Image 1: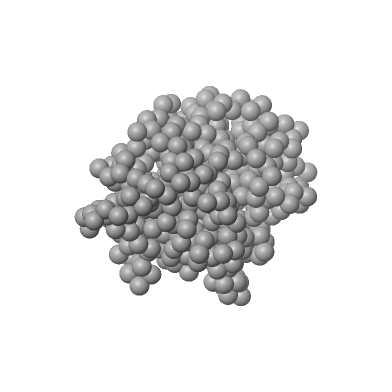
Image 2: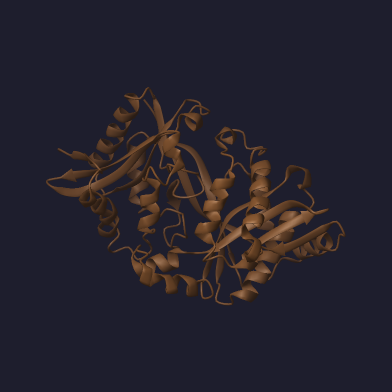
Length: 380
């Protein structure tokens, strides 16, 4: 079978890149399109700082003039070189259920990497941080994807594994219904920590949101650069002040203040959790578009959302095992539910299968593992 690979360099091909999933998932009510502008920003050299560190190209695949597949290939040497073997990446894969097509896409991606001195690649990954648009859904095709998480039809797993893909690692998503009471043990820990004179906590202060963003940045950098998960620790990317300002600007319109909690010990920022309403609920209504006339819907939505996503969290190493995670999670859950009674459940996403400490913490809060996203590798 003959396939034509066309680099996405024109407005028409950009449209085809985005339109293909709508056709593939036409009869799958679980799929929700991500915001088109957000995906476009990933491939915009002006918007994505990773272009200063590496290279990314995207392609559509055509058969008899019709688009049947799409993907992106990428490398970021400073991140790739910490892996053994050194691995580039492939991501944003969408394709029809066709074994030959899947093999052709992987073969093309392998050749692209060989030309750049690589002998291995992994995917699906994002040309950016690994907390969004990363991994192939391999467990639970019944629940809709939340903001930043990928959904794939079940046949993708079969097709990719037939190309020689081997599991690199898994990340789990946890679910917790808001109508569940906080377990007694976690409530006791929270109360005990909260009553210590040295400990304070509060919601994010929208009037001083950039200051609080800086607190979160400091905690995050110290917390995640000291993670005890060995295999991918070297991939940690430090949050810069510019990055956190961009994140604040992006999320400020939709933040529920009660769902962003910062804890302090003796006045020092020590632990935090950031949750956001599931923006996919808006994307589902607008078919992935976000025009000016959608803005009122976006602003109103945060007080009628039904799903919440844990976006990022962390505790400074010297304050671990104090119970601060229980405090921030518990108070965040309770106060967010009071502020937004329409909320049905929380998804705590992107927990490494190796991060047993976070798994136990989430399970102690009444969360259960309900989705798995897998990153594969190909060596060649």
